[in-house]
Structures are given as C-alpha cells and as structure tokens.
Length: 460
Image (cartoon, rainbow, N blue to C red; front, side, top):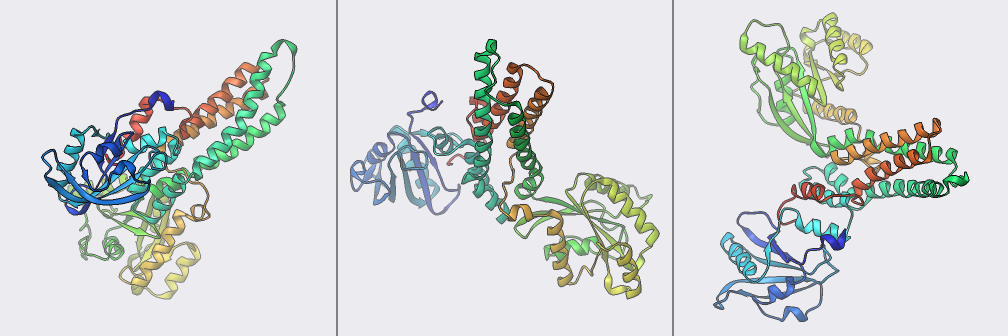
C-alpha cells in the first residue's frame, strides 16, 4: 500500500489558524521541501544544515524583494511528522505576508495541501496507524480535559494496542485452520476447536467491553445533552442561570414563562454538558405554551440525562410518584431534584428522603447546593472507567467495526457448535480479522482514507 500510494509532490499549507496574529507558520512536506525553500531563503544554505535546526533569514521573491524576516525550522526525513523532509517557516502573522510567501513557494514547485494531507502522509509512511491518525483530529478539536485525555491516549496507541493484540491471537488460529484446509483429505487437526472456542470467547469479552465503552466515549467526545425539566415554576430557569453563572433564562413567578427551550454549555469535571432549560410540563390551553410542552417531551426522549425538578413548596407526593414513573419509562438516566428547600419544613424532607433516598434536595440560588448537584451529575455520567485508564471507544467508525467483529466472532462460535466445515469457520475468522484491520488501517480503501482525512483541517 505504501509504495502504491507514495506521492512525490511537495505540499504546502498554513499550519496556524487563519486570521491576523503575531506569527504564522507555513509548513511544507515532501522530497523537495528543503530545496524549494532554499530557492527563496536568504541566509544559510538550508541544503547543508542538520535536521531539527532553526535558521534566521529573509524570504525574497524573484525580484530579490524582501517579503519578510523569518525563522526556518528543518526536519530531515525520516525524522519528521510525515517521515518526509519537512520545513516550517515562522513569519509575521499578516495575511498579506502569508499569502505572498505561500504563492511564491507554489511558483517554485510546491502545491497546496489537501485537508489532512500531512497526517495522511504520516500514516502512509508508517508513522502511526489509522486509529492514531484519527486521534490527531480529535486532539485538535478537544475542548475539555476528558476529550483531550481520551484523544491523547488513542494517539499514543492505547486503543490500537488492544486491537492489535486481538488480531494477533486470532491470526494464529486462522493460519492453523487454513493449514487444515491444505490437508483436507488427510483428516488432521492443527487447531483444537475447544481452544479456538475459548479464544473467541475471550476475544468477545474484550470486544463487548470496548463496544459498551462507546456510550462513555461519546459523552467524553461530544458532551452530554442534559434536559432540565419539571412543572412550571419549579425553578428550572433559576437553576440554569445558577449553573451557567449568568442570567441566561428569564426568571419569573408567572407560570409558563419559558415557552421554548434555552440551552448553553459548561464544563464540569472535564466533561462538557449542554444544559437545556425547557417549558414547564403541564396541561395547557395556550397554543404557544402547548408547543413548548411538546418540545420538552421530545427533548427528554433524546437527552443523555434529565435533571427533573420538583417544587418542594407545592409538592403533591402522589403526583410526584406519577411523574417519577413517567421518567423511569423514558429509559434516560435522570436525577430527582427537590428544589426550594428553604421554603419547606424538615418533616416533609424526611418523609421524601425515606421514599426517595436518591433524591437531591437544594435551593437553586445557593452556590453550595449547585456544587453538590454538579457532583451528582458527574456520578451519573460515571467516569470511573475512564479515570482508571481503561480504553474507551470515541469514534463511531471504530464502534461500527467492533459490532461487525462481534457478529463475525459469534458466527465462529455458532460454526464450531454446529460442526460446520473448516472453510466456513475460516471465512468467519477472516471476516473478524478484516473488521479489526479496518480500525487500525491494515485493511483500507482509498475511499475510506479520503473520507477520514477530508474532515481534517488543511494544515494538519
């Protein structure tokens, strides 16, 4: 694959974000990266310098006009990100200067890079596997500590290591089964079916754990859509404002003030939560409020978490239990929160605590109570697995490949139990190996690579 897809072009792109800044970094990669840069650089002869060195000089156009004073960093193959010759030019961050330098270098033989082409070349040249390459994009886009840690673990090969171990164990048995096919007429058994079944069951245990980790991985990568729901005047908007520490939602004693949902995002414990304040749930004849209630019910069904508020000052225990039953039927994790604790007596609180030990009691305006709520929210997300350093799947493509792997492994077990012929068992094992190989890039296609790297930014 590597030789077939090798490209001798030298590519160029701006590696820093678009817009005016103190500096801009222009990156070139390819066999001629150093020679092309040397044509326009006035300073030391770059072709005679060592790798990992930095050189001061000027960039000059064809008329010997100085475009800028720059620092040029050299990374000589294979000691670079792409394992090709790489040059990084640090110039002043003027859009005009950057454009002039890039156009000059294109005239000298470079071509504009495609999205993700630097990382794609690193993958093609064996710098890392496909799962690690995808983690580069995740690392760039990580907005929270948890997302950063997950991407860093994957980029360093944590997830890839798990997959490679699975493949290696399965390849051994696959080769034994294939060998048996070559001696089909001699009725020999190189691979014990009991040992193969034990292996596949062990692999299924690991694969199932990785599949189950995707829910947590999705939370870490994309955040947690969290609906704040309850009856009108339960204090939902007050709670949202307290969580965000700003007056995002209108707070009023008039029931039904919030008629559509209001949302904003904050980070709690390194995880992004998108809190959605919704219209109060009640029967209403107001046409606009009724639409708001319907939207609330729809949001609750698609949320990852529900914070359901009960107004303790107006609580009806029978009605409360009915609402809790409705929540339980949604199948969405939820927190029961009794609000306006400052307006009720201890006897009611004790009674409710006895019936609902997991209910949190608070006053939404109290900072200490809000911090306690945040802790309970994190408990519900359950980051313990992630904090232990276990491998967590965050990529939908990997998740789909693992599901396909599981199906193939289940077919292997079924084939062994039904004593099917070796060629069918071998076919199912090859299917499992294929889907595992798709994750790390041992098995890939041009279309798959184009789709993955097209999502990267141009300079990466």
